[in-house]
Image 1 (cartoon, rainbow, N blue to C red):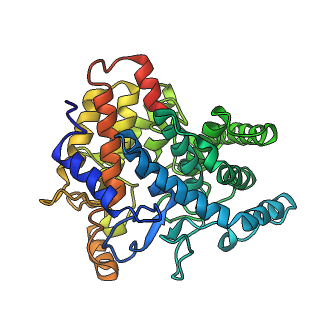
Image 2 (image 1 turned 135 degrees about the vertical axis):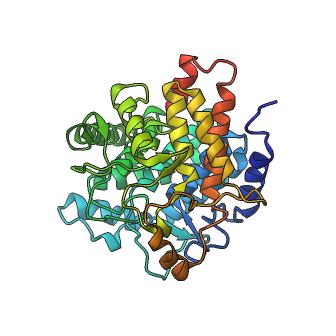
Length: 380
């Protein structure tokens, strides 16, 4: 019997995500948190779908991909306009680009948000291909949306936009580039693109990797944005599960090392130094990403420690929060956010999904954690 994916917390996580998934296929970010209710993010949702797929919930993942495809095909003309304008040297303003989040019905929210983010569109491509590889699903039904997404990303990947945290729109973020490249690589390698699109996707991915090598690294490790000296907890995802960089390489080892030393305390990983959101706490989902990176690099013991810390943040009802406040970077800022939006988002579906994903990876390597082929698969 698998240890991690059959635990009470894992069973609760699986049931919670399945119960809250909407009839349209969207994954709510959090059912009760005031700023998130009513919305699904492409990025969060793609990682949630990947976690559900990894524990055998294939139908749930495919319903999410159906939702993504419907959102995109509904905007086909607008996406083609963005691509045409960009190719003509008139890239649209950020407010005219695709948003990061949508209502469950696929609409755009009417409240102000930090919306122009590219990472989610790469991540849904990557998660879709991961799922088809696991379960043998036919990607043909999503092909029109895949093609629209590839065209959008090939035209737009080098633009500054908001990062995973809806911050710093003036920069090009390495985590965003990793999501985009992983998605483009996935659909190209899966043979889902025609010749012209495949060429464009591979050229864009190669350009991204060259740019990251030149401006997205410092002292041998990945950095927060191009030209930065800081790091970000989201960089662990670039190593695993996205596989943008090899976790066992010098770059991967140096990135893991700096994330452990700069951002991780007693197993809990912060977003970045200087974070003030709810005081800048530790995020269970980031500990799970770091655990996946450690596991893919060959350190199963550390991956287990990171999993155990993330699991320890569950409430008595087994709900996982977005972050915890035991080790705040900016404790004086916590109440400002509580007064604005209420207490920390709990449950956060993304946290539950990442615990499932790391648990599935740990179960897959339980018999032989040093098996090269398994570890390589986790990094893809």
